[in-house]
Image 1 (tube, rainbow, N blue to C red):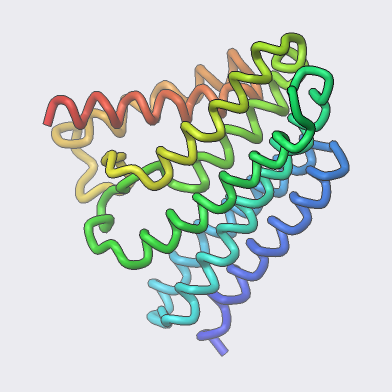
Image 2: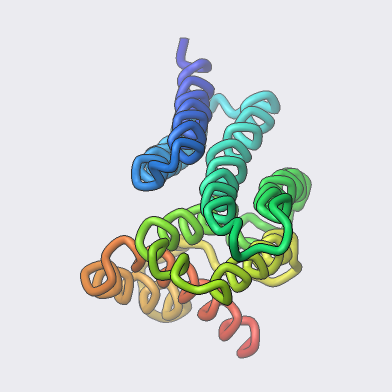
Length: 227
């Protein structure tokens, strides 16, 4: 019985992603964001439960990637598509809004690479898909009206899709919030990141999630430069 627990949690992640996608296409982005966050919670606990119960399996690994691409690839792409579609008067061609789904494809590629890359035990190579999903969904929920106020901002979002798609599959090392010990030495970047998250959320609200992800990418780049 216990061997089915992690896969059940993973399926809850997948279902959350499906629900998020539905609300994204309906234009109710805040509910879509909520279910992306719920999916992220399930994603955190499925791997943890598999390790605690000692029931990790190849099928669980593949199912996890499928669920992640729905929740963290397709759902945020659907939010982006709905946003770009609303700017039809700004974009030279209506079909440009479909470029949002490029990010879903790159998310799938990133997840496939992650399954085969043995370098990512204590960190990430490329931007993790949950971080990318939270960036876009929280940015559009928190600042969608502002971004829709100018055609230039539409083009900025359009360009950002390709930048984040590149980051997903890039060879840029990014730190993970995994601790070998709880001391300050060796964990400075992680503690600095965590200490700044709460003030950013308090001050910027939902948009603070997008700022936190941008701050995470910047800190990772600084760490790489120092190393």
